Length: 239
Image (cartoon, rainbow, N blue to C red; front, top):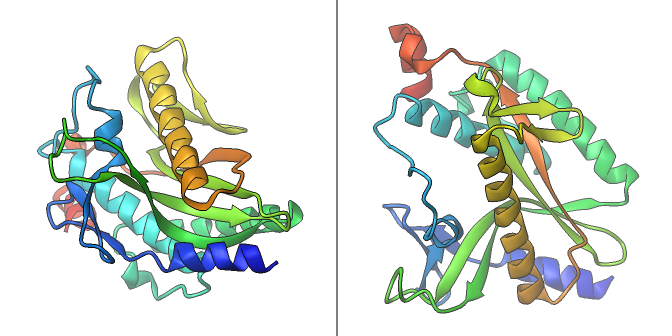
């Protein structure tokens, strides 16, 4: 349908990027800055912030980035050689490709088409308490699909380590199985749902179409605790 094609073209034409310090988005069309959605969401949170000096920081970030890039290339039909994704092994890449192929078949069976990857959504609002110069908030959607009726669906990919201590979070049969008896499990569930609900609101405001479904796609990867890593293992995940 023409209106769907017009919306897709509009989304794909968005020229936005994270600033070098990754604190704000910059709209390339207007050069206007936008606060990151996660920053806006967490402004009143009492949860301890992300520590960039933590031994977990580089491995989790680098693995997540490689998985995101691999996924984007897969749905673009443009997978590159294994060396292009340095922080996930060839074995994990092969397994991930199989999982993504199965996911793609599920989309096809439900009449959904992946139409955009890493789409940046904007929402103009007052965020002067966070940044006096920002026009609102912005965030990146991992996967966006649309069906023949013009209904869009948002999927957010979460990379998780398969040996998370304390029972905080584990992969369940129907996505992420949060341990609600654990305080951290409840916080993660609320955080993820709030993030997806915010993206839904932003997309509906931006394109004026319905977004009947939002969901998390868990990607499980295995690596030892950074505290106990050998120097070779550390280099493979942090270089």
